[in-house]
Length: 317
Image 1 (cartoon, rainbow, N blue to C red):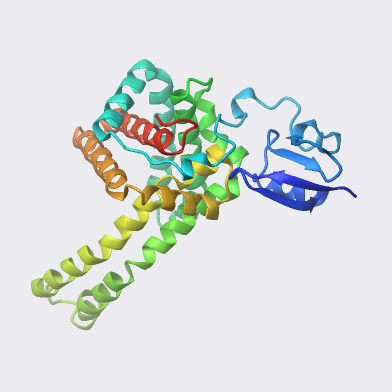
Image 2 (cartoon, rainbow, N blue to C red):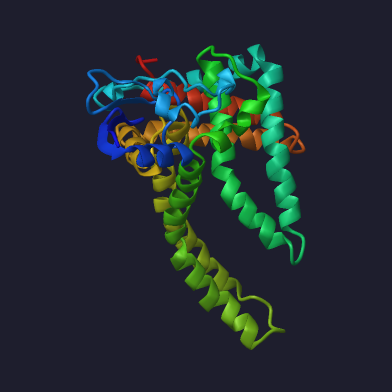
């Protein structure tokens, strides 16, 4: 049985691996029809879809919209610097929404409807935990699909509302892990707050159930929470582009986390500032009876994807 060399989404060469390994990676969403490979006896790399032995692995009539996004095969972005124009990202996001309103508004509406429905169902006694677990599983792939649509629009590529589900058809496992692992790691930073809350509030409430909460203990808990939020904010900012890197460059979640971490830390305050600015824009939308979020969310996502293009695109944006 022939062995193969593979070019991963990070531009690195892997292998040799067996045909079974290649098929498994395709099934896991780590390889696509356009992923470059060659048998050990071949002279040049070519797309996996061009190998007769893998003809049945990829759907013969796969939609053109699921073709990989245009991204640099080499990791030249790791060597170059960048500068984010925070206000420019927001204004370009607004213009992108204005020029593609129906597509981006409906895509955001579908995303919000799914997350909102699961949130409501998650509050139902007994069956609620089932929906919470379901959301844990689909959140990464769904968000990855949202980024997929916005990136294609930013790049002027054909796309449609249904491509929000692209994350379920490509890199499902990696997107799931790319959402889960950063969340778990950041969540560990909140353990001191949880312990303090149990000791200061929960245990006294259980011991003396009819006593009102001690205000002084609550005031002690607030600074502990604020201190714990510092590493959470740092980590979440460092991993801002993890899902976008997975869906765009077909990286595994570990490589995507490291790549996002490395590039964000070149100008951490700029990325944090953009995230803060997007948060303020969404807060304004939430204050407009929550309906405004349907208009501010796509602006924020588009702004984030413009920042992604500046940092990770083929050319300095």
